[in-house]
Amino acid sequence: MKPIRPRYRSRLATALFEWLNPIPYGLFVGTLIFDIIYAINAVIFWAKGAAWLVTVGLLFAIIPRFINLGHVWFGGRGTVTSLERTDFWLNLLGIIAAVVNAFVHSRDAYAMVPLSVILSIVTVVLLSAGQVMLAFDKFNRFNLPEAVRE
Image (tube, rainbow, N blue to C red; front, side, top):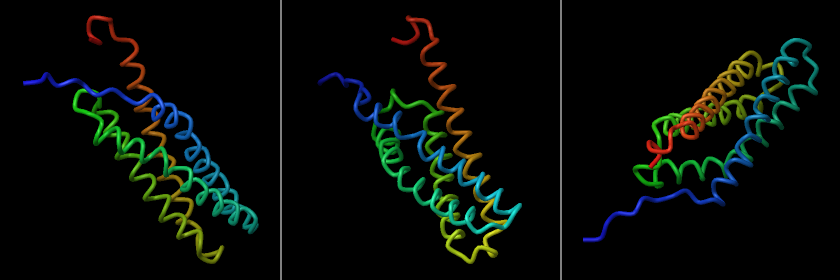
């Protein structure tokens, strides 16, 4: 019987994830800012800008989410932490809220407030919680004593 070797993360996938993961987060924060500005002053420029930001944010969210999906669900038993799984679910819920937000932004400009602001807040809060969890997970992983890591 062969011993089971632990699976390790792909360096390319990890680098690609770390490079692309912040982009949709920034675009969704921009969407929230544009939605708030539009709710305050009703200038159509801000509504159209928010619609573009949420759409481009969703396009940029595809690759990091597939990498995260592969890592969390197909990465191996001992290499995935519970915080990474929770981050996966928070990001999935945030992306679903952003998809609904994109459909809300396709409405008439006056019909999208206040739902667009609420969905933008939900998206940013969920993605922020996921980012904080990933930061704590990295902190815990790199600050363990050498004997515990092995």
